[in-house]
Image 1 (cartoon, rainbow, N blue to C red):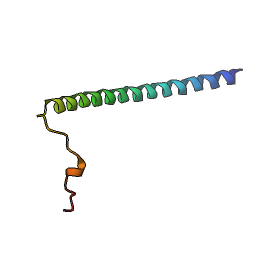
Image 2: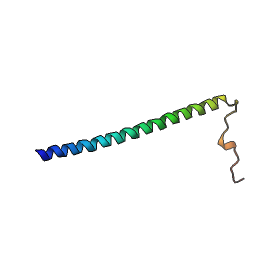
Image 3: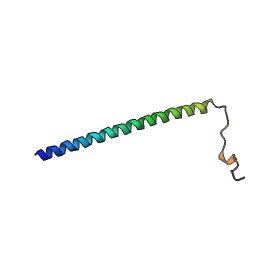
Image 4: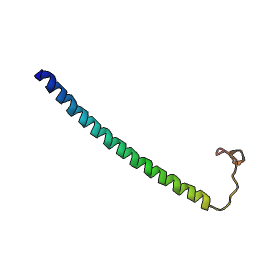
Length: 66
């Protein structure tokens, strides 16, 4: 019985460490997501603020080897 209890305590300790590591990972990922969302918002504002250029087709551009 003592061995089983010790084994469970060890497993709980490893589980707590794993949960903490996963929490840190999720926190960092959320920070990255928040930064990317802000960057997308800034890019959208730049596009809206840019002069009314007509969208151009890639077919109208000259290939780089010409």
